[in-house]
Amino acid sequence: MSNIQAQSTTETSTIPTVAQKLEVAVLPVADVDRAKHFYAGLGWRLDADFVRSDGSRAVQFTPPGSQCSIHLGSTSTFFLVVSDIEAAHAKLTKRGVEISEIFHRGEGPGRVSGPDPQRRSYASLASFSDPDGNNWLLQEVTARLPGRVDKNATSFTSSTELAAALRRAAAAHGEHEERTGGQRDENWPDWYAEYIVREQAGEELPL
Image 1 (cartoon, helix red, strand yellow):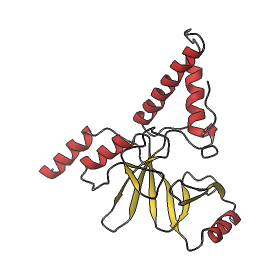
Image 2 (spheres, one colour):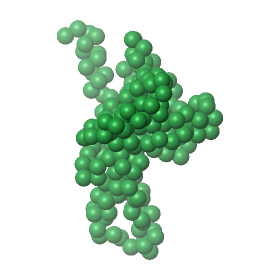
Image 3 (tube, one colour):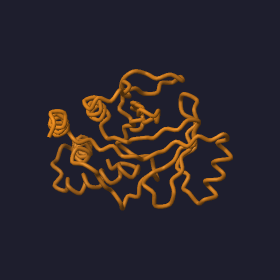
Image 4 (cartoon, helix red, strand yellow):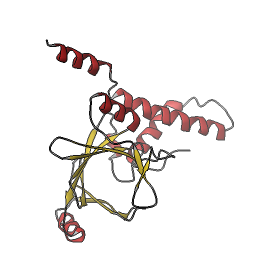
């Protein structure tokens, strides 16, 4: 094994695993409404059609049974969904990827430096390109919008992702116990499970 290979193996083994799920491909289209009509005609599920705060329009479809969706847009981009954008950004940086700073969308058309201050789901982003100019966008997603995930198919792709979900459930459960008079909840495993499943499916969270 060469020194370069040995160094690469050592560095890889010391970098925590961060799931990066390919969930969205942006398709360049000339007319969004015409394209929307076409994909709706295929029987694909319309997940979203709204205007963002920066004025851009978001239209998303998902083919039946698919774990990956499409956005109708003006340029080709692939979305990698992560549960912790800071950890994912650090991992790619250690691998020598020229990646942008983490940013979020403000009220105007430009980017705002840093993660979303409230760490809202879908709001924190970072981007990079491969040597052939293909664009990739990291997006931090912790709680899904309604209808995006089948609640009967809850899954996690890494222990890091599951641990993050458990931490969010623990914090929410602490608030739940305060609201119920500070009594220890003996059924906390059931509450955690319900919270995590609802969060991933984008449903109303338990109180």
